[in-house]
Amino acid sequence: MTAMLEVRGLTKHFYMRRGILRRIAGTVQAANDINFDVNEGETLAIVGESGCGKSTIGRTLLGLTPATAGTVSLDGEQVLTLDKTAMRSMRRKMQIIFQDPYGSLNPRMTVAETLAEPLLLHDLATPADVSQKVAELLDICGLQPWHAGRYPHEFSGGQRQRVGIARALATRPRVIVCDEPVSALDVSVQAQIINLLEDLQRQFGIGYVFISHDLAVVRHVATRVAVVYLGRIVEEAPTAALYAQPRHPYTLSLIKAAPRPDPSVEQISAPVQGDLPSALNPPSGCAFHPRCPMAQDRCRKERPELRPLDGGKVACHFAEQIQEGGFGEPTPVPPMLQRRLDVLERARAQSGAE
Image (cartoon, rainbow, N blue to C red; front, side):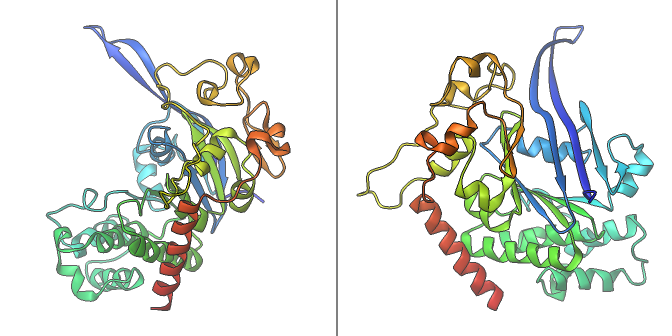
């Protein structure tokens, strides 16, 4: 079966230029050789530390940031090579929900004007029936008709994010990139927004690329998870399999990094040490080797390629050793993460009942 969204070799480099002649003095490798598929009604989560390139991947596949190399295909049509006129038409099929709903909304436009703009721009409504279309969008996203006349500053954070979702939904897109859509919200509101996104996915068959650093949220919403480290995917697997048995040391370190809620309980140090290296000068071989407790000479010299392993993919020379035990022995979800999962699940159930 052909995937709805196909990303192959997607690469984005930012060039640092200096001097009068603006010569290239360095290259920031924000994303390198990114490959993944998204099927209709599926959610692919992209996770990793801050600065690993998650948001750059999302913006580049939409064409908001020009790609250095690679291809993006939506329903068989190449996206990155389209001219401005064709790209405007493609915008109907590809939308984004931003992390900061307040910063992404025009403070001088009412909600009605914000939602009417894409409808009129793409000829999805006439001036005569645009008000009805706006009211339908508000209703679908859990807002009231009178909210149409309000400005962004008159809403709570959760309501503003609903407006952002309604704006993305206005064109009935095939794919929506969700860039940390609930990170600025408290847990109860997170649950409401997650329920809304899942309801919309079931209703319209939307495919999500869900960018997040929150493992608790990702575990609830994602069908599959791609773990990104320094601009490269180091592991990709179905969500349940990835949480049950991480194949890459970095993935395991992300799960173990959650702090314990009880200060009387001895803290188990996360296996990863140090900070994320600079994308301007990435380490040789495996980029994770300076922080990896399993690193050997081969890791310092040879970069591992992403290869199939037990239904997923992993870029680690010694992934089989992680399976067999030792450092990678399967461990239960850390208590803090489990508690967040439980709280989120209860909040979702309550918001769903309402």
